[in-house]
Length: 235
Image 1 (cartoon, rainbow, N blue to C red):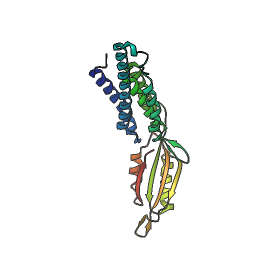
Image 2 (cartoon, helix red, strand yellow):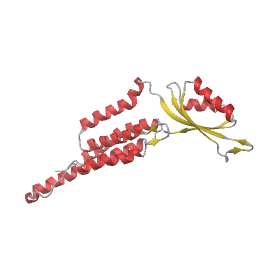
Image 3 (spheres, one colour):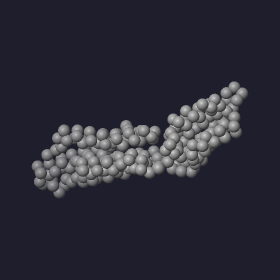
């Protein structure tokens, strides 16, 4: 008694598809853990779950062939899985960023944990749990976001000449487009010089309304010749 090759391949393919859909959403929003990360996490969990099943089957086969060893040889089907659940927390913790005012990356960390859980149940062959769980995860990520006006937090870095004039210009633009400034960091690097002109750097942490995108901000503000560079800082 053992898992046949077709069943193993089927479970790995399902794990890849399910985690790829979840990772695609993260990729679209420029989060650090995208498609490849989620697929690898889910596949890793699935492979270890399959390994745990094979260990249990092998133990049963040995016990059946040698009854005298039944009390000596044991296999706990949850032992390896428990290590996955605790171990994935260390990987997910690396996606959490703590700044002075707020914490980011919690959703990505939670998704990695959920993706690992889906990999486990797929690997164990619990397809009903896996498919139901995956549908709900996608619902929370994609569909739920369309029903509620969830504002997106972004950090945008501006480099520009003439601090007072262009700083006011940028803030006026944010106000006109209902972009809420959570906080900003101003930096003056003495090495940032363009001839005799000094280049100033400000990083704004913003809540963007649904009506505007980063690309629109880039196109609008880049028309100002005094703004040297605009960068999106991924949260």
